[in-house]
Image (cartoon, rainbow, N blue to C red; front, side, top):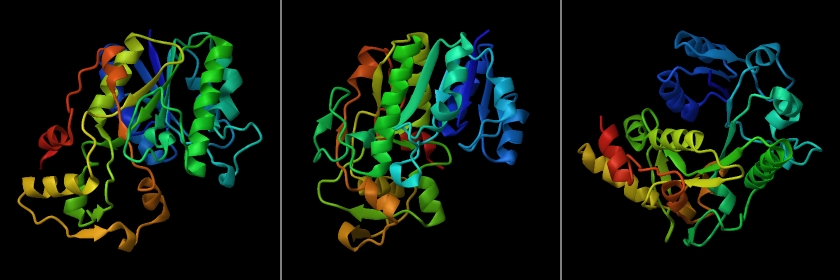
Length: 295
């Protein structure tokens, strides 16, 4: 029987899990919060606590029999206590030996970010583009990606890296921000972002599971990079609301994490998920995705 274990049973894993259980899979994963673990159990999933510290007996109990491992927990950067192992990845730090000994693993998916490409001055990038991390956070991502690829090479387990663009979907879209009054239109000349609907992420993961390719790296993004302000304005027009006023980037009071996203401009090429995995995106542009999410 196929079994998925998700280190970090988050938004993407929750989109993938029901597709797999519908085919008879069992699903387990980790969450820090007990209320979330209880909610997962109510849906028929097994759950264990894990917050990056010492291993937990529940994980030791649930890992055996795992055939497919999905991992979405961000690594620590050097300034956050990045360990002497050089990669800062919590799962490899605590569970590398256990995973190597499992014997049942057929597929590992590591969810990374297109942020590893850094600032490409608006140019298109593909999986052959050399990473150019421009922060401690993205440097840690590059190190963790390589650590997982090394794990795959050393153990023979097929490891796959998925570099995700900005994720949106039910409960996590610009409509929710408009409703909460937190949507902003930040104007930075020439700035574009790529994005991806969570259902399309699940489709890519399913396609990779069906066609493993050891060491493969996939950009997971839609077809049309766009300025973030354009997305906000389009969503506002869809619901008959007045778009929030434009704010110049240099004058915007942004938290450091948000500001860091604007320090890199690139267009993410997604040809590989189509050519190698045969993926057809359900939401190839932000307009398609927003049309499906319109309240």
